[in-house]
Amino acid sequence: MKRLTGILMASALSMAALPAFAADEVTLQLKWVTQSQFAGYYVAEEKGFYDEENLDVTIKPGGPDIAPEQVIAGGGADVIVDWMAPALAARDKGVKLINIAQPYQKSGLEMICPKDGPVKTEADFKGKTLGVWFFGNEYPFYGWMNKLGLSTEGGPDGVTVLKQSFDVQPLVQKQADCISVMTYNEYWQAIDAGFKAEDLLVFNYTQLGNDMLEDGLYVMEDKLSDAAFKDKMARFVKASMKGWKYAMENPDEAAEIVVDAGGQDENHQKRMMGEVAKLLGDASGKLDPAAYERTAKLVVDQKIVSKAPEGGYTTEIFDAASK
Image 1 (cartoon, rainbow, N blue to C red):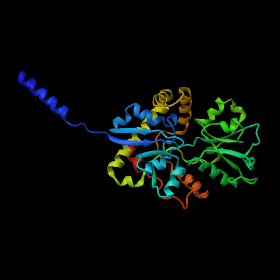
Image 2 (image 1 turned 90 degrees about the vertical axis):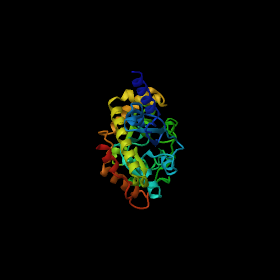
Image 3 (image 1 turned 180 degrees about the horizontal axis):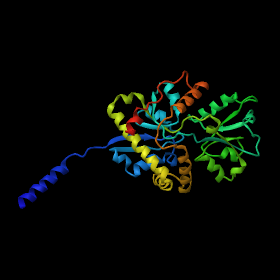
Image 4 (image 1 turned 120 degrees about the vertical axis):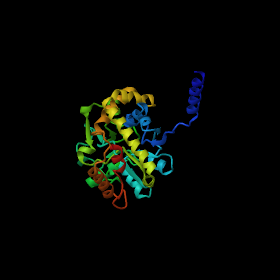
């Protein structure tokens, strides 16, 4: 009996001494600060979905001075969340980003104007001041203005572009006639600032046919020549979309997870999660080729890129993640 006990102890010690299989490390760079806009990734981390795929994921928040395209080009991330227009613009300049999945299937971009202001229709934009975000967020706006035949250089036959901060102060302080908002964020900041929904004129990019794809997952194309990296990304996409589906089905819990991760104002995060859920479609993360072509055409029409983009996305990772 003593001999058996000794054997079992020795076996246990031997097993304990064996090195554990290290999880594959993945660094994800977000497009903006920690908020429910990225809930699926935080949920996947908190609920253990990344662990199930043997992944050790580091989620890096973004901010006003952080361009995801630059971060990944400099080796600071394996995968980034980005809008397609700036991703295609970066690709055109030699940073070979490629879309591997598309969690957001609809755009959340809008422009709002007070109904008692001078803008009543698109025809009234001429000569007005419009608030727009930059760092790649301006491309859908420029595409829209190009479609309307309006110059963005100011003057009576164009519009004056106000470089807008990520709040609604230009509207509150009447510095702009209209400002840019996201359905899940700044629109509600305007409501919280005292504007009533019935007092706002809303131009929705999707309804107007001016939407470009937002919040997709991108990697450097040359990394996909590595079979191990492709496998890792397939597992990352699978776990991330499981996180997004869970977030859609459990929005309040998802928002609480975001707050625990550093998101501000639980009520705001819960409201944001409810609006974000409307943009996820079936939460599959599948890219619609027609939406890609529409986005690609818009960036060409407004001369954001020098030529029609080629190879801006691949379905290989999504297909592998779906199996």
